[in-house]
Amino acid sequence: MWKNRKHGEESPYIPMGPFKLRLPFIHYKFEWPDYVQGLLMCAVDLAAIPLMIELLGMPFEVALAVVLLNGIFYLTHHLLGDPVVPGWITPAIPLIMAYVSAFPEGAERVHALVAFQLTLGLLSILLGSTGLAKKVVSFVPPAIKSGVILGAGFAAVISVFEVGGRFESFPWTISIAVGIAFYIIFSKHFNQLKTKSALWGLIGKLGIFPIIILAVIIAPLFGEAPWPTIEWGLINPDFATLWSEYTVFGLGFPPAMLFLTALPTVLAAYIVLFGDVLQSKALIDEADDVRRDEKIDYNPNRAHLVFGGRNTIMSILGPDVTMAGPLWAAMQVVVIERFKEGKKAMNSLFGGSGSFRWGTNTGLLLLPIVSLVQPILGIALALTLLIQGYVSVRVGILESRSHRDLGIAGIIGAVLATKGAGWGFAVGIVLCILIYGKKFFTGENDEIFTKDIESEKEKRIS
Picture 1 (cartoon, rainbow, N blue to C red):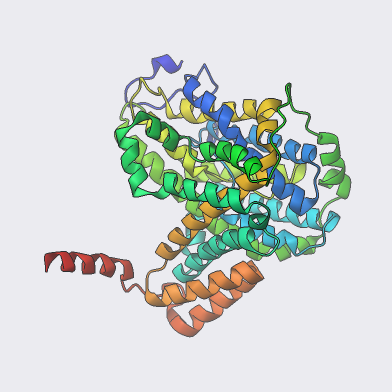
Picture 2 (picture 1 turned 90 degrees about the horizontal axis):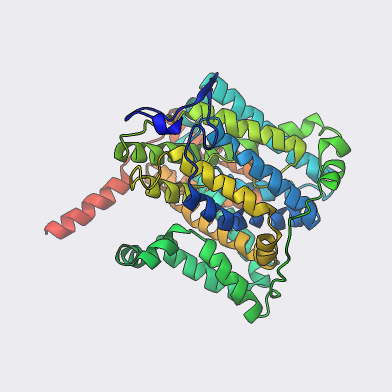
């Protein structure tokens, strides 16, 4: 059916209410380059394992079962009509880590995580089904939005460099890996290199995977991790222990009070999550402008239903600290850049995003890949958190619209990162009332960033 798509039409699908079912080989062409890249990039999905081991006390095989379940549900996005590469709610991970750490390790902490993820999932489904998602976020004052995202960035960096944090375990490897990663991802100089050489271009498209492979070599050289012992065969995830000791099947349903306690942090997580939804739409609109041959239907309400459903189901089957997010931004960019090269490079965006996630799921099953990166998963997580910290601080600052917003946001961010989302919101509300009064919801716009741009133009003219 995918061969019969007419110019300017959507890829073929089976209507299912708000969803549009598309199956590989039938409704979209399977894209082997994206599948192969997915085989390698599953290493990033595995970086969630040390988080679950650290926070929930899960054995490795149990945490692996959670990652595998999450991987299976990643497929629901493109299968149901959402043309994205889904991932974690990465900016919110430090907030969730701080939240669950406030509860004693064991059944109470697992219950807190279940209540949090279930609340977030049901909230997302509610907002998606009613179309209220955008209104809820626009209701939050810019200074508070800015502060929440800044706080997520601060918390990400703190979690790596705090006393007893990951930096103390892997100082040399993290320093070298992060330095190279920031150069590859954010440097203007490397952007220029990518245009001059196919090799540099390929390294740039692989995101942080080359850095993870580099860490596999660097960590043993500095004595910070053992050399990997490559094992052959398929993985052996422990679903029995997962369901008997870490889910509602074995521990029972969380107390009602935990759902109320989770609300401030759920709202904070949703604010940063909605930023990913906006980013998804922006990236797809950009691709749609270039590729006129395929109409791409991105519906934020449908996206909410899919990732809301993922979080709801995962809270029951395998609660996950990383949460089920709407976008893996780095890989979405990689897939879209190849899509822009034309129909011969990628027939449909659904083929690219879907084939990539089929690839990551295949990679998660292969023991040689899992055993290769197992010794440095803590480093991979630290790398992910620091990159996210950089992005969150940058995005958080740009959410502010005035000097006063920036001041309020800085205080909110610091309080949120050190005392939690409840305190962060409380401080933000009080400061916005004291500083803006009747203009609590609108604040002010003194065009702080516009003025900076105009100032630079005036200097060049003079």
